[in-house]
Length: 109
Length: 115
Image (cartoon, rainbow over all chains, first blue to last red; front, side, top):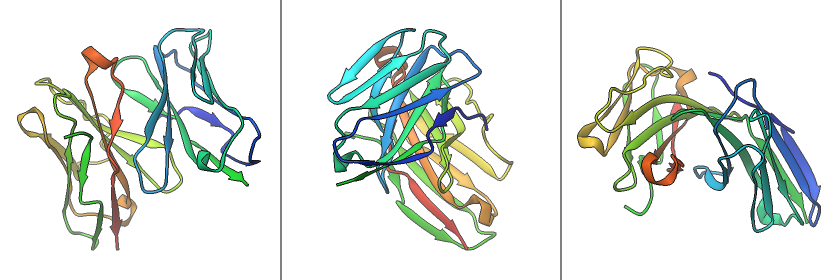
């Protein structure tokens, strides 16, 4: 099935560092969502974006809806060990969401 | 319930057998989605139910896969004559489009292993 291009695929960082990941699409979306998935669990919503250019924060997380409506990024500031997991973006034009391939984050204490 | 509930959490089956996976959405959510997540991959859309409308089955990979949603609540995903490539985590999500801008809430998934 169709998937978004999400990068990087994986990253190892030191505790305290900032992290940035992004998603790009060939299609225009009306909504971007960012999820985090821990092992053995379902994805949990982090941030929802509904307007082009929108910048939204949730604690140490900040996400933006790209002006072209074809991309989005997620930043995590001052990473901590519990940030480890897989981060997914998801874009939607109507009811159907297309998910990115995920960014696997590992934080070294 | 408080969240999306899926059962069983793990299912091991032999090739060729049929399996049924269950999803109990958040109470009041009218939309329900099934996804498949293969090892190390993203989420692959399978099927979408919304109220009494005809489901969007465009993501089902073959006619061995089917799903139903009885009474607008609980859904069952059935895989007939399972194959080894069906091994994956099957995730269910529900949403309430008119209220929460169609934000999807996920269950913990069913991990299916076909031997």
